[in-house]
Length: 327
Image 1 (spheres, rainbow, N blue to C red):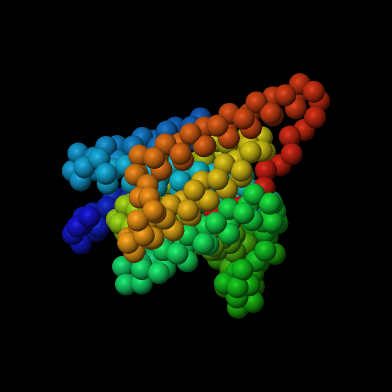
Image 2 (cartoon, helix red, strand yellow):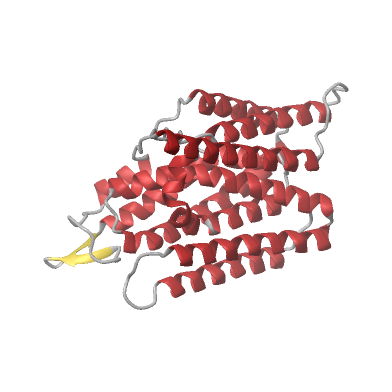
């Protein structure tokens, strides 16, 4: 899809305005916990915004591009739900007060949005130049799907290289200083744990992109659609964090559903690469099939998880915690 620089600039400016307004709304007055009512409103707002964008894309660019966008958005949003597990672990490890968690998530999401944008542009350019990367992406998604199914992903947070560098280079205060990222202690400027947590959230989400970005490139190679699907999925992520809360621990089958989706997209990528190379037996999967598979899989795994959680509650047992993936 041919998109001008002005459309890109307008889209990014619009997203930043919405996020700035969001931050201003929740940060008015004294810091306070993000309520369930607020979270419900903002999740609904961002989902509605994403749907309206898809409808507009349908009217302007046609059903094929709109279908690719909705399939990509559902995939990224589903993977983002699984990512929330590690966000809970990070918040708990750094003992972030609940009144400041929404700000940490917002800044972390902004960092991830910028880094993912760079990742997407580089990935799109590489795929256009090196067609064999489709096989690499497909094989990587299959590998990730198998590992997720087998439960090889660890449920603990490990500090990445950038986070360790920030800790080593910048002196850090012993505790939080309100919501400030820096503070002056005994005449010396120091960073607070607030900045460390923001870097942890942002960089960890970028690591999650190592399989979510290839997944959406398996649905569309249009950089504009890939970016917008990622952007709208990320924008509502922090509200979803507060809305789902303890419900995440009840979604015991979600990793199995995500494993199936990643495996399906991995096979789709390889089949389409073979089809493009002239292999007659390799089918080209229509976007409506991909959209249906993703939607049905997430509905089935969510409903099955909630049914199991209800049965466990009635029998007095506790649902096993869902596995944490890096997707």
